[in-house]
Length: 145
Image (cartoon, rainbow, N blue to C red; front, side, top):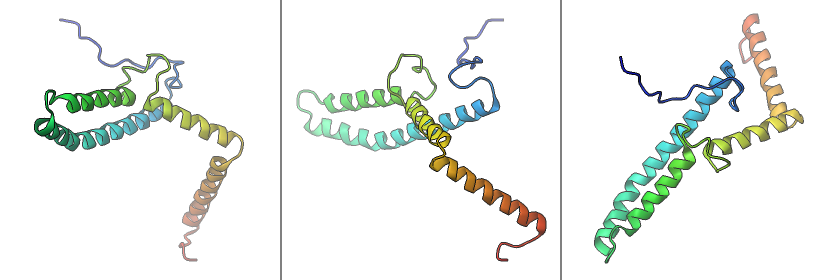
């Protein structure tokens, strides 16, 4: 039997992703879904733009009809590295990426929550609302009462 190359890299305990907890898996899933959305949106935009750029190159490209199309390909490559859908570039130092941006937003929200700011207040209100809904459901009250 031949050995197969491992395509994915399992997360080791103690990584930046927060270990092997279920919460860390949920976080990875959410980040992957955000990346999939960004990748799909990029593809949705690039598809018609590629036709326009190619047509412009064919009609008005002069000596280098590929010029604009090559620039589009370069832009696609840059966004591909930035989105880093499967995390192949994540270990490449401190380069900007969608996941790093998500990390910064998460840090800001956690810091705000720790200070008792808007996120902590929102959590408190959601917990109060959930408790009120539970109380009404167990007491048989309708929402209009």
